[in-house]
Image 1 (cartoon, one colour):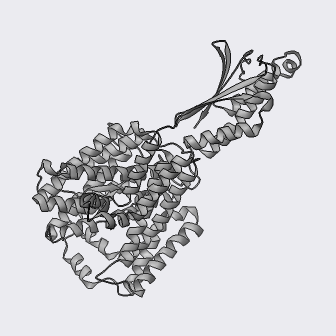
Image 2 (cartoon, rainbow, N blue to C red):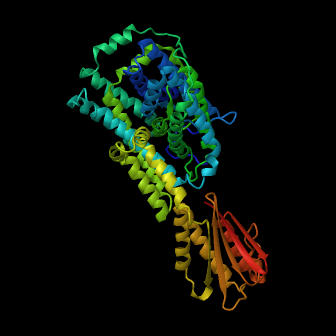
Image 3 (cartoon, rainbow, N blue to C red):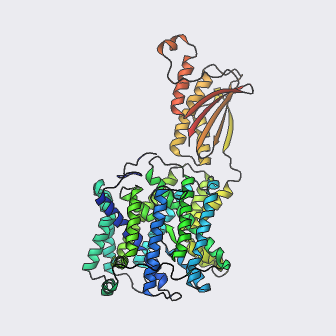
Amino acid sequence: MRRPDSTEFWVHDRLPVPTALGLSLEQLLFLGALLVVPNLFAHNSQVALGSHQFLDVAAATLLACALGVMLQVTARWGLGAGYYYPQQSTPTVLAFMLMAGSHGGMALAYGMVFFAGVTQVLLSGVLLRLRNIFTVEVAGLAVMLTGIVTGKVGLEVLFAVDSNPVTADDVLVAGVTLAVLVFCNIWVRARFQAFTTLAGILAGTLIAFNLGMIPDSIWEDIHSTPWVRIPQVGSIGWEFDPSVIWLYALMGLSLSLVSLGTQTVAQRAVDADWHIPDLRAYARGLRAEGVVHMVGSFLNAMPQAASGGAVGLATSAGCTSRHLGYWVAGALVFMALCSKLIMLWYLVPGPVIAALMMYLAALLIMTGLRLIASRMLDNRRSMAVGLGLMIGVANQYIIWGIEGVMPSLANFMRVAGGVNGLLVALCLMAIFRIGATSRARRRFTVEATTADDLDRFMEAQGRLWGARRDAVLRVKQTVWEAFDLVAHSGHIMASPPWLEVSTRFDDFALRVRFVYEGVPLPAAGDAPPSPEAMLEDPEAAARLSGYLLSRLARRVHSSVRDGRCQLDLYFDA
């Protein structure tokens, strides 16, 4: 693990108090932005919860979010990924909740969230078996779709408000906010970039206030709300109905796929050398999310999705420290107990939130694109990623076309949103593995083989495996050095001389094996031969080449098996 250059505070770094307070306020503003979700749910015509029950639901949701952050950053008892990534309310769960609520009331809608959590816990147990399906390029697709969905929500907040059409003031406030965010991200010094988002939110809110865009009713609601209020968590109740387990199992699956994309962003942010998803950390993080939903169902908290936007926000500020999680968790608990702070969030106008989401979407989309581009893709992987991206972006057209003939599938796709693309990519990756192999073997005639022949062979294997470009380049150089050593050192006795090259790839390591008939190569030492040995020992040149190979590959091993000599080169994938 290597510290990224843009990171000011790394995984285990403690935060100075002023910095911690500023970053916590940024995170609180962003995580609180989607308190509009419990607000929409509470005031839906099918639900019609009172204002006090709305505050109870919002407070319970904040407490569940605080629990989730603590589990993730502490990483104890097999729960938590060990790095900072919070959860926040998501509008994708509204359809599930309203459907269950119309079937059996709000107690059932909240009670069955328990089974969404159970689904996540069960999925975490089989995640390690998906190593060959959930590859780096699929993880990159998940990050891209997370960014696209985030940007789409931002554009909808700004432009798709039917009751209040967009005005010039809305566009002005959003434009200024976005301009401040971009300016701070590009031209401000690194030590001050931690407050980029806070600067954008404050600038946009002040301009909106001067333009009279904050209604007087919001000030009245804030004034009438008490400062401190102990939330009555669980007041709505808890009920169970086996007929809607399938509905919440789908919710759990959808939230799990979002979690994988968010955790990829978090893992990529903490390690400059990241190239392979840590599926064990994925499983622990997903398990913690499941436990949060199981506990939250008794608190009557809204279901929450892993927040790729919050991770991107912290990363853009140069902070990936786990200690940020402790500050954020404390701030969330404080906000849950202080009802007036919950209402204060409504001072931040919609255009400011829209600009913030578009800014974070741009960062997430480029992160996902870099992940995909870091791998060599063959036709199978290219089709899986390309079709998944297309479905994830344009799934609404499919929904419009099938809602008359397959309403159940249309409803699921409508609820899943961008996750549809990730599901398609995962299914295609599983199907396209038919006929694919992680092993390859080819015999080369020494006299007729050039470096280009070996390069083409290794590049074809790299595309088939989806290996990193830099790893394949390093392997190509080392393989030609090894081929030249064996072919021209006099160790091959076959006539005509030949070399058999075989490869094996398992997503974590790559082995290249040379097989030939003749004399085994001398073992490479821990140091190059001395000048005297180079003059006196006839094997010294071969030992020197073997030593140089050991510096290029992770491990070099020479052996004899079934009367044939073998030279094995091991590389990190």
